[in-house]
Image (tube, rainbow, N blue to C red):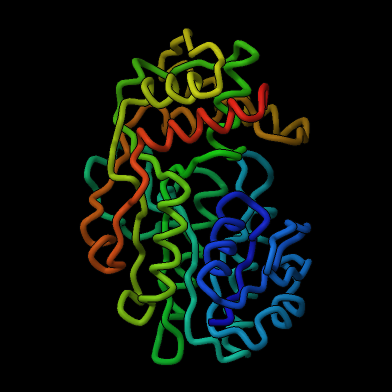
Length: 326
């Protein structure tokens, strides 16, 4: 197929593009900065530019939309511009080009309202009750994508849960950086069970969704390893892989949540860039269980994770050993 992948400069998007190329697909990547992807036609631009997106989609047989604003801070308008209006531009481009398949990458946070999720299904995206600007904007974008599903366009929404792997700067990178500087803390007892997704498994699921779009269309599917572990264990294993000290501080949930509210207000007032050290959403994520029933996902996509949690951490350890102090 001729596949357009938006947001291919990150770990996940780049891996998806390489997987498609390896099996013989023609891949065009659309992103804001060069990624140096071998065998991929790279087009630079932003999903906020409707005309640029329209041109990028011309001639495509399928689109995998992965580009998003993924941070914990900033005004809602910035999130809406990328995660809502960007989706609108992609949908308009897909319609104009007559593309029949769209895989839209979302997040489990679109249906997370701060409570524990134990063996939960995907649940409907809820922009009004999702926590934080990122989650609310992604929820609105997801609903738009699903509303476009119909006779002329098959849409599948994927929600990879806490994805990580070698080169990850979002989850593993933040844990390791804070541990290295002595600032890594656990919220509450850190015994809540959380599932995660090794990047290779997310890539395989994404390609499977592309191939089975016509069978799984109209669905929102959570992707994970299906191996929930306590937060403290996941933090400790990430630290061990990178050779940095594990977290030794435990912050009570109420204190972390309250501190997050104060820090968020200060970040907004001062116009600070970058992510704050704690937010209310992050405190909730670290203190509550969230793992999902994967049966429907695996049945519809005919997919199973191939890399276990243990093997994933072995690969992570090897990647840090190959690049000391990375």
